[in-house]
Amino acid sequence: MLLLCFDILSKRLIFMEKQKRLVTVNDISGFGKCSLTVALPLISAAGIETVCLPTAVLSTHTGGFEGYTYRDLTDDIPKIAEHWKSIGISFDAIYSGFLGSFRQVSMVKDFVKEFKKESTLYIADPCMADFGKMYSVFDKKFAKEMTSLCALADIILPNITEACFMTDTQYISGVQSREYIETLLKKLSALGSKNVILTGVSFEKGKLGAASFDGKEISYYFNDELEGTFHGTGDVFTCAFTDAILTGFSIKDAVRIAVDFTFDCIKRTKLSTPDTRYGVDFERGIPYLLKELKLL
Image (cartoon, rainbow, N blue to C red; front, top):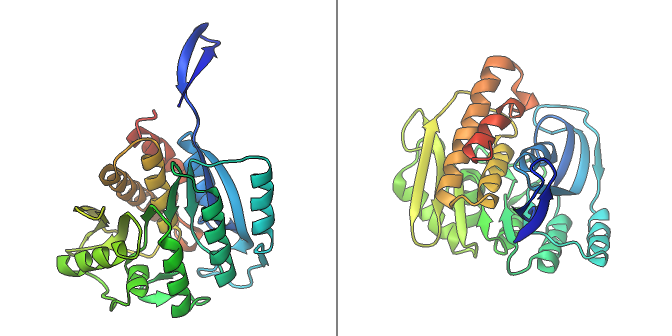
């Protein structure tokens, strides 16, 4: 939608596209760059109004830190949704990430069914597993529940581990075969989502990237693989991908932008931050991302 606006500097009327509004459903970790502390700055930087529906508040994320505080906000989710509904708030996109319980998944299903209109894009990151294992707070039953939520999404972005749990496929670490990845993509697509983005794909040592499948065509994009384990890179990837999609890029180009931006963040982090528990240095990469999005 285009709006007619008056530009004070040029003193003339101009046409401006209506600002898009996204709601992100995720937890808040006060320290350690992940979840909402990644989504809010990265998506807002692309000029997208970013509304937050917090599922929990933690002092730090749970990857490598001990003694962290945790406040569950599950009971607040339906109350927040009801208030938004009462004042007529609508969204151009919904993005869900880490959900801490079966109840939260059920509530997000209800939220999506209530707020997702025909034109609303729903992007789901089934954040629950990595490196061949479920996160310690989850089990295989939770993977099935998350799968039912992903069936409502227009785009899902699991990593290899999550894809395996969602499709009852044996996990293979390291370099994969093309046949293995394409089988995973087709199994994921059969679950209901129109578009599947699979992260952590590698066909040769030293190269890492993502695959996409729209039900017809499979595409790949890779960059160099950097040694080490870095927290929050899945959130960085998904947010950069979401920025690209909502600013008009194709899924192929959005994958390319997200892979390259995530690589850029990891490379910078390796040079500047010895403790990788803190997350990746995405903040100083925002100008690079905006140039890739053609917003600068």
